[in-house]
Image (cartoon, rainbow, N blue to C red; front, side, top):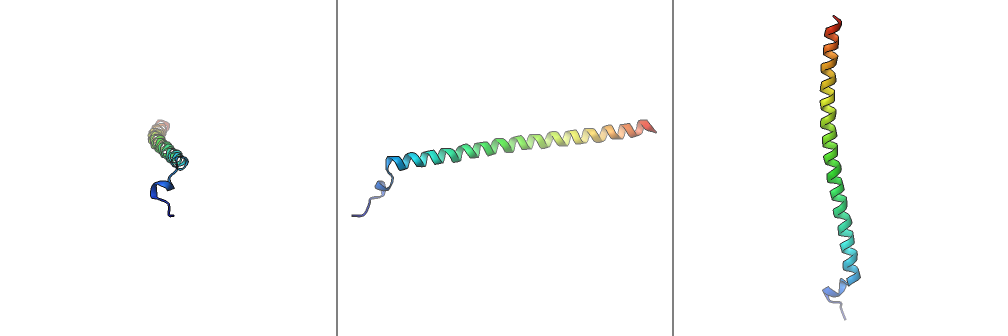
Length: 64
């Protein structure tokens, strides 16, 4: 006798699927968090780079 569709998904299989889905969702949230941190770090780096450029130009002007 062929298994019915619902028979393929035992409680254990459903639990395993839920666990795997939860792991995937957790990983996706972690990736999103890391992407936000990377975005903020890049912005901070760019701001510091611009500040350093201004300070270097000011310093060159003071040396003349």
